Length: 507
Image 1 (cartoon, rainbow, N blue to C red):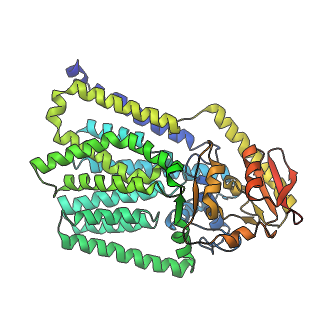
Image 2: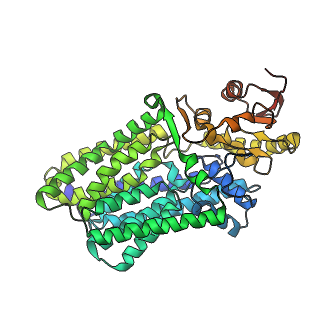
Image 3: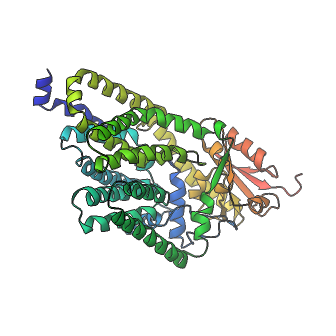
C-alpha cells in the first residue's frame, strides 16, 4: 500500500486539498460585508479615509479630535494609492474598498508563501515536505494576515529579509543578498514597527554563528537607515510622529493574570508546543552530529529566542495571535530541518509518524474551529450585509441630526461611516473599555497608557465639548454609556442606533 501511495504521489492529495480549501475560504471572506473579518480592519480603513480627506496621518493624539495612527506609514499610504488607482472613494465606496484591500492582503499572503517555500528549500528538496509545511503554516496563521492590516506586508518583507540574510551568511555570500536583506528589513519596520526587535534579535543571534564584522555592518546599516527614515518621517509628517508611533503604543496591562492575554498565550503554546519539541530535538542533534554555526543552527536558536519573546509580546494590551507570526516561520522551518535530520528514524517508524502528524493536524483543526479561523456561515454573511446597509443609511440620518457637533462612537467599528463628520476617536486612551465592548464574549482586561495622562481627554465627556454619543441598540452598549459616560442621556434613535446627548444638568 505504501509503495502504491508513493508511486502515484497520493500522499500529496490531502495537503494540497487543505491548502486549496484554506485559500478558497479566505478568498470568499474577502467579499464579506463584515466591518471586521479580523484584527480591527475598520481602524486601518479609517486611517485611509483620513488620507483621502487630506487630513494629517500623525496629528496630535492628545488634542481634539484625538485621532492617531499607531503604525508606520508604508501600509496606509500604499493602500491609499491602490484605492486611488481604482478610482474608489473610501468614504462612499466602503464595501468596494474593503474588498480591494482584502484582496491586496490575499496576494501578499501568496507572495509570502512563495518565499516560505524558498526558505524551506534551504533544508529539504522534497516537494512533499514543501507542500506539507505550507499546509501546516496555513493551519497556524490566523485571519489577521488576510485582512486589512499591515501584518501580511510586514511578514512578506520579513520573509524576504530572512531568505536573503540566510543566503548571504550561509550559502552564496553575495553582496546583493546583504543589500536586499537590509532594504527589506527597513521596509518591514516602516510597515509595522514591532518587527524592529525581531530583526535585531536575528542579528544578535548571528553574532554567535557568523562573521561578526559582517553581521555588525548589516546591523548598523539597518539601524542607521531606520534612524534616517524616522527623521524623514518627522520632517514629512510633523512633530507628533513619536507620540503616535511610540507613546501611544505603550499600554500596560494591570492584573495580568486575570486578563484575556493569558488565555491567548496558553492557546498559542498548546498549538505550538509540539513544534517546540521538534526544535529541542533538532538542537540536540545539531550539537551532537555537527555544530550550530550553520543555517540550521540559526533557525533553531531563533526559534527558541522567538518562542519566548513572541509569547511575552502577547501580554501587551490589545495583543492577539498575530504577535506570533514571525515565530511561526521559524517553527515550520524547523519541521523541514527535522525531516532532513531524522529521515531514517521517520521511515523506520512511518506508521507512528503518520499517527503523530494526524493527531497534530486534528489539534490545529480543533483550535481553528474555536477561533473560527477558516469559517464562513451564510446566515452570518446575510446579517453582515444587512448591518452594513443599515449603517450606511442610518449614519446619514444621524449626521443630519447632529450637524457639525462633535460625536463619539464608543464601538469604533462604526466610525468608518462618520469619517466626514466632526467625529472624535481616542479609543486608545482607554483601550480596555473598547476591547470589552467589542468582544463577542465576556472577557476581562484592565489597562492604561503608560506615559500618557488621559485626564484632558476624559474632561471632554464631563464639560460637554463632545455633545453626542452614538451606539448600536444593544444592552452591552447601553451599559457602557451608563458606566463611563453618565452625563449623557438618550436623545434620539433610528432602527438600529441610539443617539445620546450631553446633559449639562446631569449630576
